[in-house]
Structure formats: structure tokens, C-alpha cells
Image (cartoon, rainbow, N blue to C red; front, top):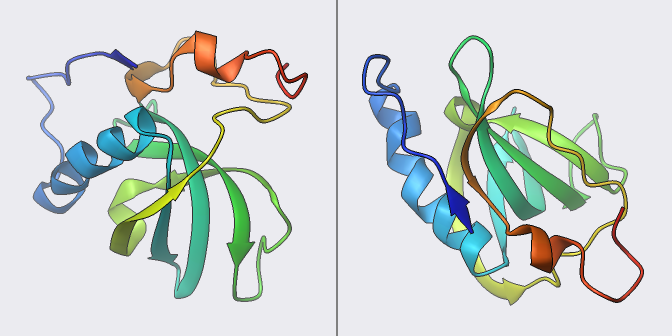
Length: 126
């Protein structure tokens, strides 16, 4: 797992900052995470934490389950860490390989699943 230190000059809001270590652990251990996002349950394979141009920490993950009116189809999603509640790192592991993985170029990476894992030999990498 690649880790980049957070910027010291622009600290995260306390609630978002507290979620970064468990999310980085989930990424490192290829764990599925569950959380509530905009009032709906999300079940997501965590792949990367990054910082938006506005400085907000974001999770890039493959959502394979969810509830609510929006984005319940499986696929890649970005989530604002500060808008998550009830975060749980589950015991369920994922392979770390999904077709179409793309982290935006030029973003500040907080932690990310290592490239060797993402591009493994099962044909499901980009």
C-alpha cells in the first residue's frame, strides 16, 4: 500500500480525520467497508483514499450493494469521507482487482491499494 502523508498546513475536520486510519487499514487488508451515505447503506470494496482539489478526503471504491434512490447499481464511486456515518470495516475480504480502476491524475493520494495487487493475473484489471 502506498501512503502519502497528509498536508500539515490544511488539517482535516476532526470527524473526517478520525475515519482515515480505519479506511487505510481496510484498503491495506482489502476489506469491504459498510457505511451510511446520504441516508443510505453502502457496501463498498475500498481501493483508495485521496484528497479533492478543495482538500476534502475522498474514498474511491467499488460499490456492490446499497440502498436508497441513487446509485444502487454496482460500480465505481467516489465518496466524501465527511459525509459518511456508521463506518464499519468488515471481516469480508475482496480480491483487490476490478476492471476500470482509475484514480484521477494529479490528486493527492492518502493511501491506495498497491499496483501489483490491482493489476494481478486474473484478467480483471485495466
